[in-house]
Image 1: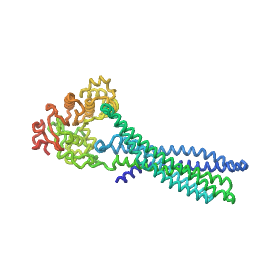
Image 2: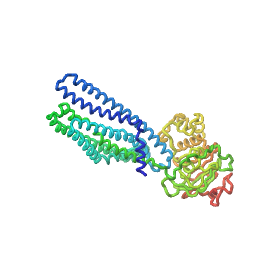
Image 3: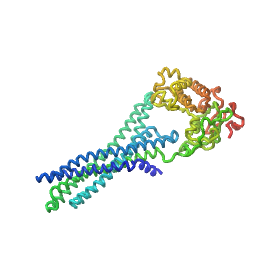
Image 4: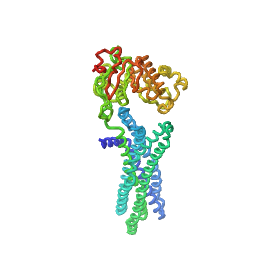
Length: 587
């Protein structure tokens, strides 16, 4: 399966033939012009030394000029056409990768590190362009020009053609062996080492304040420096192998020239060739070996491209993990949130015997969870860390799939488009992500039609009006991942974002996890108050107790099972039949 995925990635990196063939053609013409230039120059110089009439060498003079110009022109056109095709394909590959990663986020990405993902999206995808530019195109160009040159030399002198063919074959074989022996390990390691360096640097920059406070900055900096040094050694090893290969090719080129002399001089004495032809036989190998020397390097580049393709295959799986939800080809077209019941007696969402697992994990994290949530209801789910509270939030927002029944407006959630579900159910994460931009942009992606007045009003509802004025308004920046705001302010901005999206159910996952105890109660009260004013039902997820006056329903999660707290009354609008003997809403 992995090999098939790697082959699919490599096939996808190849530009369409209609875009790529022109660059190959220009490359062949450029290389052929280089060989013809040296051949024409050798013939012209030798023939001119015989002092013939100008008319006999005028064609060669024109040829030298034409080949010199065409070599540069065709080389420019080759680079232009080749990179145009590669960059078009590169844009398609990167866009396709992002499209494949979006359904996996956030839970389907597992423990993929940010630096590793960044390296894959940037460096490994960039490396794929070399399959056409540094592998296929040089191989085709070198092969065609070498064959044409051997044929041309054989026509002049068969023995010289044989020597040239043998030395070219030796250059290809031994150059590949030498290059592979000294650089294959480094070439395969470079992509991984580059990702490790990215990880180290990102961790260092992201946690700079914590590392400084605990005196661990020097140690982490040393790890980043060591990772950079290891990468540098691998790159140097690859460069050394390339230099060694180039030296070997140069030696064989010299051997081909000497061999041409050894068979050409007797042929000249026997009047089978003339002096200009001998010059051509002696100097042409130097030009063709310059072109053919790309072959071993192209095979080395191929190894590095394959290594990058393997990393891409690991990061972006061919199939979506079983626990990650996938939209149906034709999901139910339900006008949400308008289709939700307006009566407080009818539940907005219903879970019945829901079991769920994290992606790539066999053990269920939720076991037979059932609950009903009514419009405007305030519910708190308490429980120890790891009991399944966050997994429940991710089921409700369709980040992970489920077994059992989860209904919105009487329709099974898996039959709805995931985006439609998220127009009803919104999530404030435990660590809300803030983009390195201003406050305005961090709110607008929830509703891009909102005016500045709308943004200021929602910030006032979550208790950030005075803070907004002190910071200079909506243009104030929040920093990388919210570095310029406190944990409580980040939670309030995330709440404002959810309210701006006008969801019917708001899930606040551990909203007080990153704030002081004296601030925690105020944040919870602001969340409940702001949601109640908007008529939004609230699910508070917490591992600490929440004040009784803030909630209508109190549930407890333990080992993936949900139970109602015995002392908690049945909320208004919930019929007795909705509650099971264990206190959990009945199936």
